[in-house]
Image 1 (cartoon, rainbow, N blue to C red):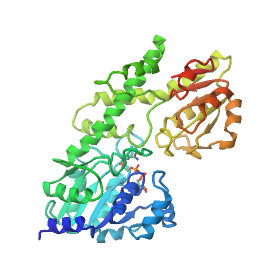
Image 2: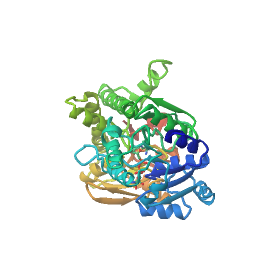
Image 3: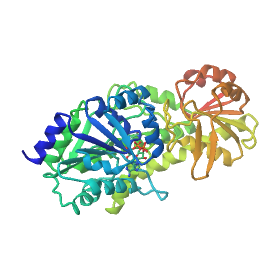
Image 4: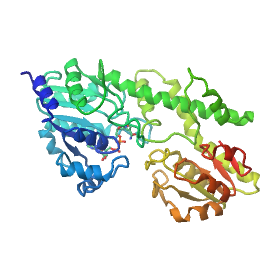
Length: 442
Ligand SMILES: NC(=O)c1ccc[n+]([C@@H]2O[C@H](COP(=O)([O-])OP(=O)(O)OC[C@H]3O[C@@H](n4cnc5c(N)ncnc54)[C@H](O)[C@@H]3O)[C@@H](O)[C@H]2O)c1
């Protein structure tokens, strides 16, 4: 049997050992899906807090119940460690490490580089490696493959199988999960795609092979650039509607009744999360190196980045209309997660909104049922959420309540009744907000 056939057999009969490098929002759910489907999985992560929490049988990812972690651990199918030496025993490894931006706005490839360096120390014949981190087209071929083959002398497609498969999971979502969201798979060679497809289709519902890692890398960037640009377009629509005196929310609802050719996006206080604000900039960075300016991305990024400033200007205006300056007055921000009902605050526009309010002298408090504490890294301040029990008292006391994230657990009727003035950046109050004198909407 060839190396490829032996590996495929191990993957199909689930005797192959699976390693997941990076056990965060993406890696942990993937590790759980593989373990649930009968693979033996080892998650490797350098963060000792994550490893310790996991080893106590506790989940640290909101989408994964502690009961699931404890059950899979007890069955011996899911383990976690900070020791990269275990890679030598692995047959199949998925890399799910972060791909943030540097302060300069350029891709921070340090996590992919360090994970690949660790892998290069332990890479061996008969191994399949799939990069899942979102990145610029060419990363798998230009950056990873040389690191994994130059010293080892292994031949891609014969001894070693390398692919890129973007992670598309939408944390907090229950209808489309890691299991049933189709998985695009781009192999360095046809044999690479064949091995990785044999592996992933043993645990995930649908695998969609494409002809190269670059096609898979670019497909992910298309998906997120599509969202970023459409959100920017609808944010600009909100700015235009305000000048025209037209209700943007009504306009969007009306347009959305068209059964074809229109997809609904809604405006908001800015982009958040680890993906949509960041991933398209990986593409524009790569294009700059090829002397091409990705114009749509630059423009969308500029519009979205300005939204927190716009929100603050509208709050200031709303207070002014009520005879109050922002300086020295109480502002309560409701919701700081980057989207409803999740516990993720990365890149959340709430941080910029709060920072700008503070800079203008407002006395800012926030409440979020999912985020007990926030840390603004650039300005280096921390804040704690007011307690759930104190929420309504703070709503009453605030000169302005600013809804940034429309968590479903809020009692918006009670908030509307108790508040003096609300700026609603998400239309969380709906028609009740539209018809209330107390409310200004984005
Ligand atoms: N979170 C999402 O919604 C989402 C969705 C689709 C794609 N992605 C992409 O998936 C990738 C991972 O994102 P995430 O949200 O899971 O990030 P995360 O920060 O939640 O998790 C990444 C983990 O990798 C670990 N890590 C760092 N360096 C490592 C190394 N050298 N070796 C092993 N582990 C290392 C970190 O300690 C952390 O636990 C990113 O490229 C992201 O863009 C994320």
